[in-house]
Image (tube, rainbow, N blue to C red; front, top):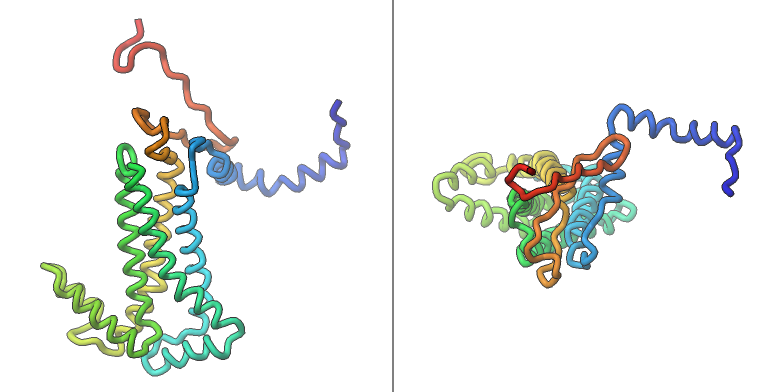
Length: 267
């Protein structure tokens, strides 16, 4: 028989849970987080399904290390490379943070390609997940553009001439190519303003777009669920179940379907 909690313990528990109850009553955030963490997934989920989480983890590493590097980086053509050397050689563990950010960019791009390959091979782009596939394609393009804008920031010979080649390639695109090249260069030729332009894109505009697209992508994943592998017996002839929206009190049970044939009234 369970022991009854003392009045003192009940008061302590109410005091400890009060901030969570206050936040839940005014935002419903706790119920949404509970729904996200404790939702049901197919029993045949395997390690291929972790590629999305690995990509998100790589992005978070890039976000944290990028903020740290921005505290010491100077986006000026005369001092940009010297500030990179200062971060690498003088700042405590600066070499580690810069290495994680530099190599993490490649890891992030590789994981995005692997994740999209898994989605394609598993057929997870089909109905009703077409919108999530489109969001993933936009995420890939935005992630590649983030890598392009960040490649110039060390402002050495390799970064400069690689950016020149990349901008010239974009300039050969039909119709919008010359406009994009002029926008990235900040004029007819690559000048000192292009570094500040790339830095603002790399630190403000593109990360904001990535965060928004990732939030939409995760919302659609939670709402539509994940797909079973193509070799699973559950993958053939079964439509994914659309999850109901979360409520403040936790999970919402779906309404029972009326008996009868779909599309016909029940007699």
